[in-house]
Image (cartoon, rainbow, N blue to C red; front, side, top):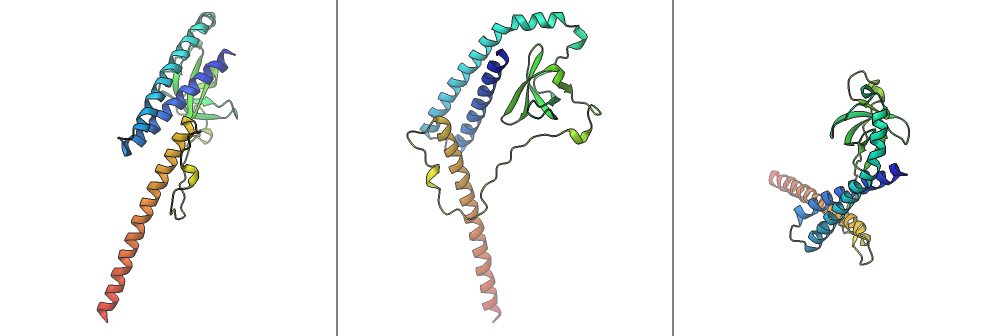
Length: 210
C-alpha cells in the first residue's frame, strides 16, 4: 500500500514537471501570453504541494525501511546515485532495460525507463550498468517519438481550440498541438514558396532560351 501511494505521488510529480517543461517551451514562443504564465504558476504551486506530500508520506514509512536495512548484511546493499545509468527489470514485462536512477531510497529506487515512465523497484531488480552485465541484445531503451502530420495542413482543427470546460491538462495538450501544427503549416508554406520560386525560375530560363 505504501509503495502504491509513493508511486502515485512520484508519477504525479514527474507529470507535473513535464507539464511545466512543456509550458516553458510554449512561453518561449509566446512570452507575453498571460494565460500561459498563469498556468505555469498554478503548475509550480501544484508541484510544490506534491513534493511536500511525497516527503511527508515518505517520512512515515522510513522507520520501517531503516529497520529492514539494519537487518540486512551491509555488503548486500548497493547505493545508487541520482542520474546514474543502470539496468533495471521493468515490472510490466519483466525484461531488463537501460534506465536512469531518479531517486534512491533504502531498499528501493525510483528508476526512469522513458520520458513519462517511472517505476519504484527493489534493489534486487536493479544492476549496475557495466559491460557484460547482461547480453547487449537484451539492453533496450524506450523512446517516445512524436509524429506530426505529413499531409497538407491548411487550417487548425476545431478540436484543438481550448474550451471553458477543459481541464488544465487538456488545455495544455491542445495548445501544444496547435503550436506543433502551426510549425508544420509554416514549414509547408516555406517549402511551397521555395518550389514556386524554383518553378518560376525554370519557366523564366525556358523563355529566355527561346
